[in-house]
Length: 366
Image 1 (spheres, rainbow, N blue to C red):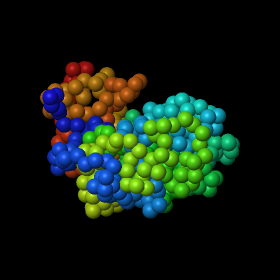
Image 2 (cartoon, rainbow, N blue to C red):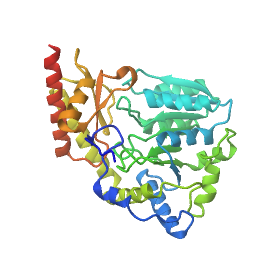
Image 3 (cartoon, one colour):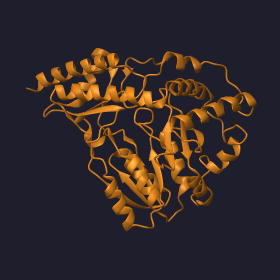
Image 4 (spheres, rainbow, N blue to C red):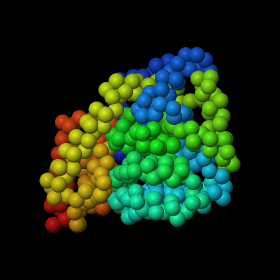
């Protein structure tokens, strides 16, 4: 068995609490009987409550967050249809790539990495492109730590009668999201980030407007066909064999989170985010995102400091794993995840490890 040699403070997956891990060892039930239907319904209702939707239809998928993204695209668009993708990082770009694979014509509204898209720019683009009926964007861009003003996006899309699809995989739980109040039509998420459960379960929540498009869409789909998922969900089942053990852990996580209440959970993450950003400023470090998330802290590395070396020292010396930048950003930024159930005291220690590693690499660079 390969055992972890460090604790995870990456932007997902996150360290899983022991009590959630214990749920994974519970005996399996058959996914076509009533005992599974009860836990399946509990998880669906828990996700509705977490995402602040009273009527949104929620489907569980045995997949990563990208699987939920693909499910959203394949169930909403038809080949040759025009869509708008609002992107400010690699996961926004993933929306673009998935839409292209399914035959959509993509109108891309983009900003440089680290900058959010102003809602007024989204409105101008939509007014100029009446053919694009679906808008795809991110709540929290994992690659850069920037958040979009999804509430304002929702207002724009609702007013202009567009379907708003949001990748909330990284931000869900840590960053505020109110699906119904904000007029968000589709939310995709995953088990391994703010919910602090092992990877393997993704989910898609759909408004009534989005559900109507599911029935009309012409893109090819099979495993992720939400029309089939809807029929099985009516019986308390999933279309295909689900990740039953992870669903056990997800149920416990949602019950604890919803007992606390989302506003309190958001507030706790905001306080941790504020603390981490203040510590970064105290070291003279520039935050990379202009509108930072409370799920992770992303810092630009000083000149001649390689972030790869900083992360490597933390992993080897302190047995904690932070994250480098992705693609061209590798070595230029360091990302510290705090999207799970972490505390201020815990993150203070983590930042202390980062600070010592940064000082060491800076000293070598002189």
